[in-house]
Image 1 (tube, helix red, strand yellow):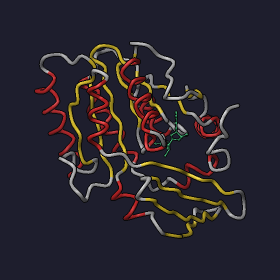
Image 2 (image 1 turned 90 degrees about the vertical axis):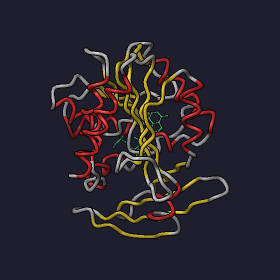
Image 3 (image 1 turned 180 degrees about the vertical axis):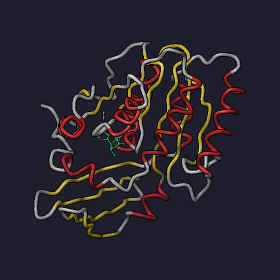
Image 4 (image 1 turned 120 degrees about the vertical axis):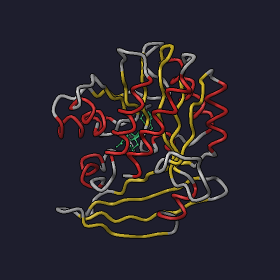
Length: 260
Ligand SMILES: C[S@@+](CC[C@H](N)C(=O)[O-])C[C@H]1O[C@@H](n2cnc3c(N)ncnc32)[C@H](O)[C@@H]1O
């Protein structure tokens, strides 16, 4: 039996709730990184949610598509943005083989995988789906993010037209955060995320033959520190010889954007 859709109740409220989120940063980084992908390339955003990034990229002329586990999120995305190419699929079993030039997986979608073996499966699938020279860009949130902004907190938000009520707990022993959100007086949504050390992910990327180009604090594109709340990972399958030089240029460009 299929697992229940975690976003069944929340999906149609997702976009207004996330209206403060800086999608421009992911958009700019994705555009900058595309310099490294083999041209022409197929791009798929995995864990795409309601397709915000896919939509931005398509408006910029890309042929991007998105996949997400939640049928409710995909439907909400299609309703909000017309006929976007979004499909329901599991990033632990991607329907692509050796064919994608660029995969993104952003806004902590990988933290939704609660078992280490699921994370391994996802990285394995990314590596399998990429073509030679294909690029992978994903992020995860850190324990710092959870303890600073969520753990042990209770708050209400006025989302213009509806109210959302939030409570969040974090269990350090299991590294799992549980956030409950209720829209007005409706049903409660439980969002569960697990925090993973970045070294674990780096090792997994290497285990599946990917070359790690960078592990950066997402807001500065510099080495993560104990203050880092979100980490960007950039990896490539069978990179060309000059990739490090090219990547240095991309890093310089992105740092300029982030600092401006
Ligand atoms: C915080 S949302 C981010 C959505 C989107 N990337 C964005 O920027 O708005 C996390 C998303 O990951 C999706 N997700 C979680 N587990 C997944 C899986 N195994 N396969 C595909 N998507 C998954 C959820 O359904 C949800 O839409």
